[in-house]
Each structure stands twice: as structure tokens, then as C-alpha cells.
Length: 591
Image (cartoon, rainbow, N blue to C red; front, side, top):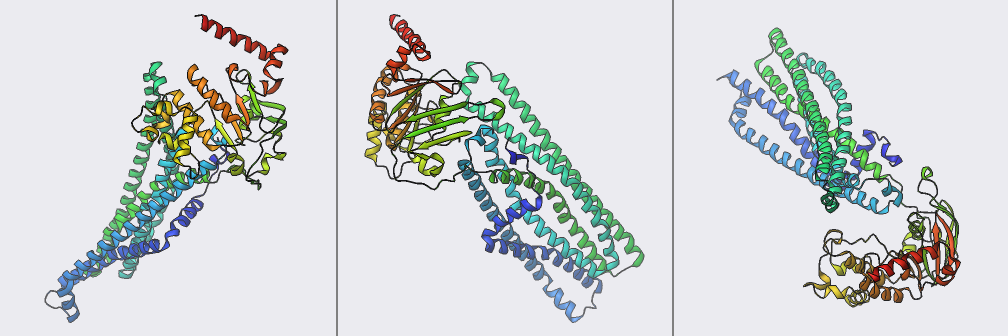
């Protein structure tokens, strides 16, 4: 887990950051606040209307001139009050919803952009499903603090203040009960806050687990079917799904209990007022206005208490989101950004480990690759081949030692500049849910259709595209699922061709191709490798026999180095691998 994942952020810090985002749209924010104030005042105005109406009824025919005027216009006043209340309610709800959605958009974009900038190590230790859950569920929870919660807190708090002030104005003796009840409600809210926040954190974690298992099942649906693991996966999902249900039910029960306790405490205050009315006998208008104010006070008090659960959800979600935003991005301390490079590479005593517990993956690697040389890297699995080439674009930095490009440390280059000079064709083919043409041109600026078609032809993509109705504009599906492995590999090679970078990394680039396709692609790759510094990781030794130089890696070290003929004559690890594969080819040919 990330170190920042467990960092505790205070509610003040979380809401302060949310408020700063909300205030980017301060005119709407202020307008919504003003509308909330008008809405809150309407409740106090209604209590005043009840008092006035009671006094008019009590006066009978003995009305003063002022009371007669009020009586004549009271129906219009009621309509005006509720019309104003309705407009204010709409403006406050719409304004805060608008701000809330803006907050969602901004936070979602910030988190997504952060994901793009985080180092490879971060993703090595994180579940993709949980990261996706933060981008969707957690941010939606945070938005509650920016819209619905704020409406309730501001509008209902102002309502409570207005009603309490009116009650004090009417009769300070009766209002004393409010100041007895308020501290009790505050203690209840504080007690429930901790419970709500703990449950909210657990719910977020359980949603992350639900997303993770769901994502794994969707992506690995063929593996699940071939191993008849539907029952196993269903059981795993049932377990996390049930946990999520239980946590939400507990939160709802706690929230409901809090609401009930708040209403009961408020009712105690009302009972006390009724008791006192029978003792001090205030005026009927004063009593009716006071009772109306207490009744009107119950709803906002209930909402203010009830919203505490949403507040704690928002705080827990905000903590999760802001921890991601506070993660350290890839270190890009370089300032050198040349227009071009030759491609000379030097690994100077390079060692690397993913973590100290698992030991070194690379140990004291010294390797010089002249510009334009075709270097092949072979060896058994786990020897460090892929790790070595992953240091070139700085997906990771060496634990010890230095990598130099054109006699300058790789860390001198800006990441953008460094990676613009590198193309990669990996055995793990990554295609995006777009057209074939868009995948070929991925990341290229202002690339012409002719250039895309030329790359497609060079990588033999046109051989299968010509049979598709939409041609290069055919959609490849999620992760290229609508294409075969060989077709996806050819598109990946075409993408490297169109980038035309001076450093080329081929990590099992022909692994998904059949023999005939590989023959065509091998020629295209040989053309591509001309005048480029190329690192070729290959399992099939027949594909790298023409390499300028071949190194053999084992246990993170270079154990052999030379041309194909030199290594065969050496009769070491490479020669043994070559003999084994030669026998396999001969056996396959004989059969």
C-alpha cells in the first residue's frame, strides 16, 4: 500500500480543500447561499403568519386598523411567502447541484490526470478495481459534501437560527428549553460522527473490493469458463457483496436511530414548553407562534442530524481522494530536451530492485550499446531482461548506477523528451477501444492518413484490414478483443513504425504471430531497425541470429556476450538454448 493511503486528514482540511474548489464558481456559490438565506427566513415568516392569524382570530370584530389591513392582505401574503420560498428553494438546490457536479468533474479530472503522472511503482502495489472505485464511487460521495450536505447545513442551520431567535423574541422563558435541548443534540451528533466515519471508510473499501473482483471476472471471463471456476468466482463476489450490504444496513440503522433520538429530544423540549405554558399563561398569539416555531424546528433539526452520516461519508471519501492527489508524481528533474539524439546507450554498474525484501533483480550490469546497434537479449524467465529495458524509458530508476544516453545521464532529459525518442513493441499488447487507424496513430501529432496507411502496409496490417468493411476505421473493441492476437501485434508494430523513434525496444514483438506472419513481420522489423538503437528480447533465437550483438542474462547479470556465431562457438548457455530450439524445430518439421 502507498504510504499516503493511511495518512489521516482532518475534516477541516478536507472541507477546506472542497470549499476552495467550490469557490472557483463563487458567483453561483454566493447566489445559492443568498437563496438559502431567503428560504430559511420563510420558515420564520410562516411562524410569524401563524401568530398574526391567531391574534386576528382572537380579536374577532375588535380589529385595529393595522389588523384589518393584515387580514385583508393575509391570503396574498401567504401566496407571496410560499412563492418566494419555492423560487429560493429551486435556486439554492439548482445552484448547489451545479456546483456539486462541477466539483465532481474537477476532482475526477484531477484524479485521472494524477493516475497518468504516478510512477509505475504505485500501480505495482495497487488494485486496478480499487483505483477505479476511487474515480467513480468515492468522488460521488465527496460531491455530496459540495451540494446536498451544504444545502442542508447552510439552509437548515439558518432556519434553526432564525426560528430560535424568533422564539427568544416571543418569550425568553419558553425559549430556555431550546438551550437545554441543543447541547444534548450536539452530544448525540458528536457521538454518531465517529461511528458514521468508521462505517463509511469500511463501505468505501468494500466497494473497492466489489469493483476489483467484478473487473477481474469481466477481464478473465474465458479463463473462468475454461477452468469451470464460475462457482468459485460467484462465491468470492457473494462474500464481498454481502459485506457491503451489511455495512450499508448498519450505517442506515445508525442514521435512523440518530434521527429518532433527535426528534425525541426535540419533543422533550416541546413537552417542556407546553408544561410551562400552563404555568405562566402567555398570550394565545404568542403561544401559537411559539408552538409553530418548535414544530417547524423539528424538520431542519432532523435533517441537520441526519446529514451527519453523509458528512462522514464525504470526509472518508475526501480523505481517500486527496491522499491520491497528494501522492508524489514521477520525478522529472531533467531539463535537457534536445530535438534529436543519436541513441548511444551506456549502463554503468546498474543495479535495481523492486523492493528490498525480494532482493536485486539486476546486479552490477555494465553494457555499452553504440548508436544504431541491434542488441538482442536472451535468457530464461526471471533473468531480468524485461526489467533491464524498462529502465530505458525510466519506468523505474536504477537503485544503483547510472544509465547514459548520448553520454548524458538519462535523468538529465525531461521525461517527455526522453520518451519521445523511444518506441516499444511489447508482448503485452495494449490497444484502446477505438479504430485501427487511431490505434496506429496513437500519441502522434498531426499524422496524415497516408502515413497511417504506409505504416499499416509495412506491418502487414493491410493484409487483414482489406477484408473488413470499414477498413482501417474498424473498431477493435475493448483491449482489442475483436481482433486476433497476431492482428493486435501487427497494429502494435505499426504504431512503433509511425513513431519513427531512434531507440526501439522489442519485447517478444513477434510472440503472437504464426510462422508465416512472423516471416513478413521480421522483414518489416529488420527494415525498422536500420539506423536505430534496438533492444530485442526474444524467445525464438532464430529471430535474432542476425543481431549485431547478443547478450545472455541470468539472475540479473550479463553472463555471455557476442555475435550468434561467437556464442555458439562458446558452447555456453546460448549454445544450449540454440541446440534445444533447433531440435524442437527439427522435431516439429519431421512430424
